[in-house]
Structure formats: C-alpha cells, structure tokens
Image 1 (cartoon, one colour):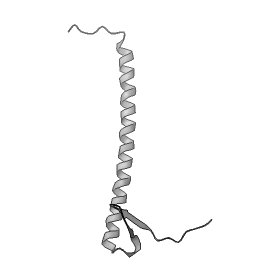
Image 2 (image 1 turned 90 degrees about the vertical axis):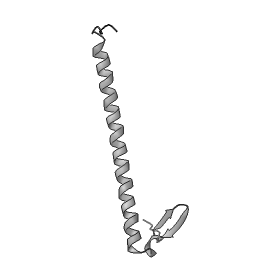
Image 3 (image 1 turned 60 degrees about the vertical axis):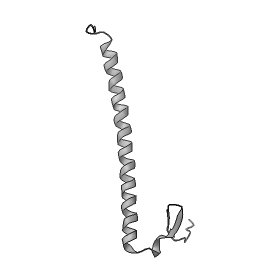
Image 4 (image 1 turned 135 degrees about the vertical axis):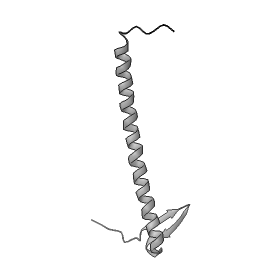
Length: 73
C-alpha cells in the first residue's frame, strides 16, 4: 500500500494552505467546521428519511380514506 507524504491541505475560498503550519487556534476552527459539516450531513439524511416516512403515511392514509365518504363542502 502506497502512502503519499503530502501534508494535509486546507482549501478555503479558493486558496490552499498547509494545515500543519497553521496555528492551533485555526486548526481547532477547521476541526469545528468539519464536525459541523458532518452534523449537517447527518441531519440532512434524517430529514430525507422523515420525508419518505411521511410520504408513506400519507399514501396509506389516502388509501384508507378511499372507503370513507367525505363531509360536504
């Protein structure tokens, strides 16, 4: 297994930075942003699952309501 010994690179607003040379405070900000990105992806996936579940329940309700007479308008 080959490993490339390239330093980790931060690409931010079109510019590249050697992550190893950044001050610790900036590295913590980068880590915080990575955590935030991961949380956003997780919650976006949760929203997708909830939307599919809601759609399924709406289809079931629609099917069950077919035998019920609606109230007059």
